[in-house]
Image (cartoon, rainbow, N blue to C red; front, side, top):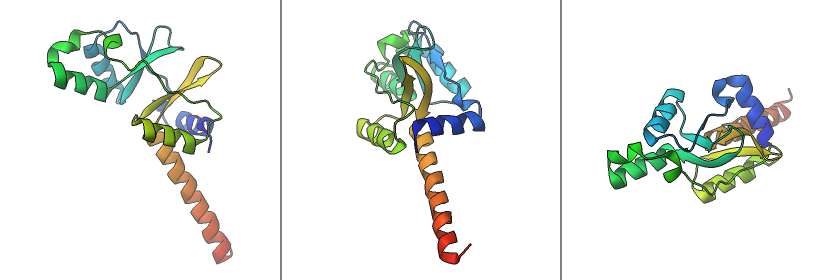
Length: 148
């Protein structure tokens, strides 16, 4: 399965396919509110909504609060965000993306095409797509064995 198929499935399913971004000068408090409101685990940091400069996850915020206390919530997003983004392309294989996420120990990845962000996928999206694919394969094999 390709990343573009995962993005299409997200678009068909819910509004979760929408790319949620936050400017780097917003506060961690504003970012936490956005994550909560949108019910997402990470937000792409971008000045223009198209070119990512980083990513901020709920884990990043919790780690910082645990280290420094709630006073850090007035700090800017760019002071805590992950700057070294790992991204993928629409024509990448889901298995390769899953391996990157697992190896890098992160759960969200921007999908880039021609220098612009066209989506964001989570490890949950990739696992769900893989499980759906395995289920279809199982049913096809069952049909061949049972003769229908």
